[in-house]
Image (tube, rainbow, N blue to C red; front, side):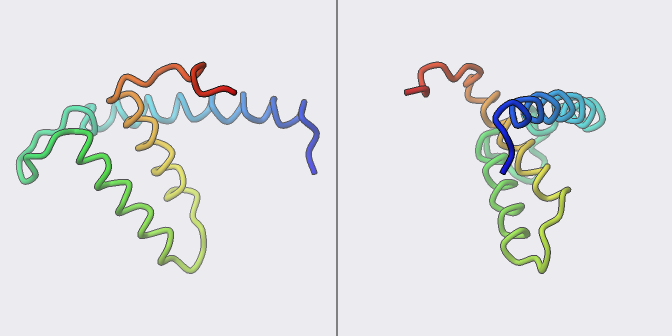
Length: 95
């Protein structure tokens, strides 16, 4: 079992690294999750992100082993959905 101080540090490392990763993917893919081109699917960005999350969760559920890429994609799409909804702060969720 990890101590709280180590976990706090690891949360900091994870989110700092993931932030840079997500920003780079967003740059490479031209903000496609939040501003989709709507060639085939005409649904709004939130619906498209939810569809992508469903696909990723299905892949995880049906995989023989858990893959870092699939989990990172779920994490990234969840973050983009939070951004799309304007949910950037979380103080009201703390008890």
